[in-house]
Image 1 (cartoon, one colour):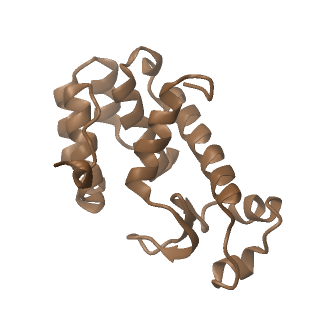
Image 2 (cartoon, rainbow, N blue to C red):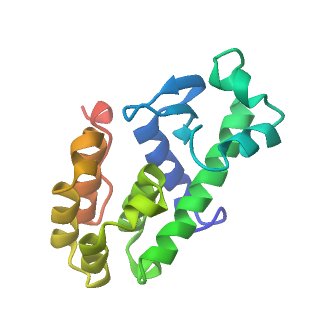
Length: 172
């Protein structure tokens, strides 16, 4: 996947739908100061990334300043590209997965970070064996699944089906 691939827009929309969009700092469900589309302000390198946008990191963290839409998009673009690279590095057959399963894996890497995703050994092995039900079961039986609510349900269902499930609030 790359920015020239039409699925990149689908990937971005999927992750953004799971994360939400905020120009001001907020505390995520795990207690991390976050901004934009799931950008963890406490992750390694976050201060430098924020300051490279011309924003005072401390003022952003304290809520004194907000990001522009362009700054949110820039952070998101970098984060998505990093998640794609992480997914490609950790799942040996990533390029051969159908786009929906690629998106689920990238969504998990985006949400968890590479180090935590890499702990999903049995899920990764199931992906590499094209055992979608087992991959979904490994996702379902994880602390991650218990923590992410609707996102987990959507990712598990999409993994099983090989097609993206819609957001619940988009269902009629």
